[in-house]
Image 1 (cartoon, rainbow, N blue to C red):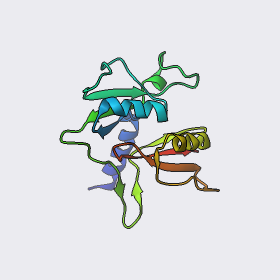
Image 2: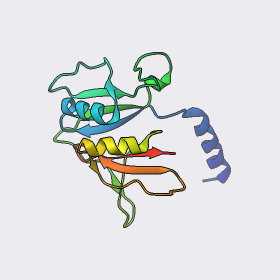
Image 3: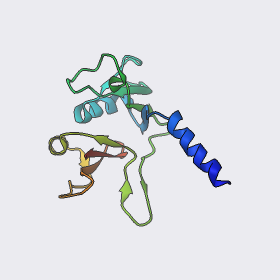
Image 4: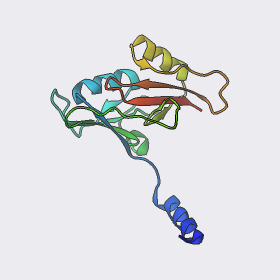
Length: 156
């Protein structure tokens, strides 16, 4: 392939893609997972799907900086988490690179990483890494949801 064509394609992608709208997470029980995500990440389900046992999908959103879940703008709608019942049981999401530890599938930003870490410990969340000290890229820690999907929290 011609390098000029590659560069033009990359330039075009920068104009076409403006963000990420959602993260799909396979779970065994959407109803029970909603409770976990509410308790630990502060998400709330949208009105798109009635919350009830046996539900197959739920869209979760994050509050704005005042704790509101409604209002204008993308902050209340994206990124969203789509909890989806995996056919035949949930596949655990995460991956490894070379001989390194397992990597998370998504990373959430917080201005209060130590508070989040403490809340997770109190709630019995499976935390799989500690908050590193003096990390030049900011503080982070990895954790798993009840289905074993690895996620990460980061404070820049």
